[in-house]
Structures are given as structure tokens and as C-alpha cells.
Image 1 (cartoon, rainbow, N blue to C red):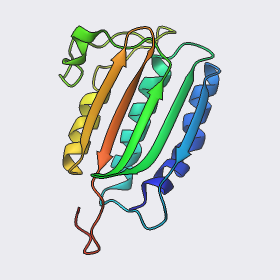
Image 2 (cartoon, helix red, strand yellow):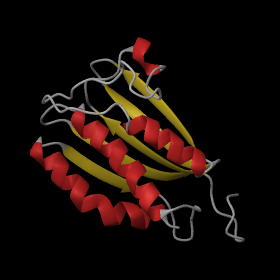
Image 3 (cartoon, helix red, strand yellow):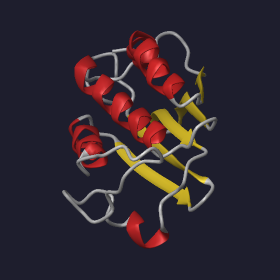
Image 4 (spheres, one colour):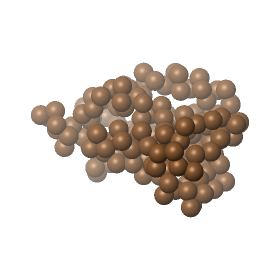
Length: 157
């Protein structure tokens, strides 16, 4: 499965969401043809949509969001970086707990379930991948997921 294609398929709907808050949303694809991961296209689309929706939710009007897809030693990295409100350091460890107190309204009062990153972590586990979150309050957040490359046999590398 080519993650690039999944992102291109979902890019228009994501860009539409970002336009509501006049957010500058860019996609940078540094992968090459033939870089594939094993996975379910619907699940990967959900991962991308959850990450970008979170970034939009916590980025104020006229902010910036960048999605970068690139090869890394462990496979293919998909990172979403925003210029949003950031996550308090003490809440970072709670991001993957169901219904944690880390959930909060977005910059325009958008509500959430507190399940977005929980779902992403579960889906990444099913794909044999990882998730990492770095954030600085008042400056923004970067969420990176890494999918292992698919071997020619169709199994994750």
C-alpha cells in the first residue's frame, strides 16, 4: 500500500476543513515510488484524518499545519506539525489514555471525545508502527507516526 496515494485521496477533504479557519495547510511528500507499507487503506486514512483534525482543532485562525511524508531508517514517517496552542508538559503522558483529562476544547471551542490519539495509537500498533508526540505550549505540536516498510513478500520489513 502506498501511503502517498491515501494522503492524496484524502487531501481535499482535509484542506476544506483547514480553510474554515484560514489555516495554511501544506503537504510535502519526500517518498519515492515503490515505497509501500502493509496496511488497510481505511485505517491509514483514519490515522491521517485524526492527526490532521487534531492539528486543525488546536491551531488558531491563520495558523500553519504541515504534513510531511518521508523515508526514515525504520520505514516511512508521516508527521503533522502545527503552529497551535501546544500541549502542557504534564498532559503529554495522558494523551493515549481513553477519556483522559488531557482532552480539551479547540481554539474555536471545538469539542472532542479524547479518543483521537488513542485510536491512532491502536491502529499504529496493528500496523507494527510507532507514534511520538512532541509539543511546546504556545508554540505547537508535532505528531509523528512511523510505518514499517513492506517486504517484497507483502509482510512488514
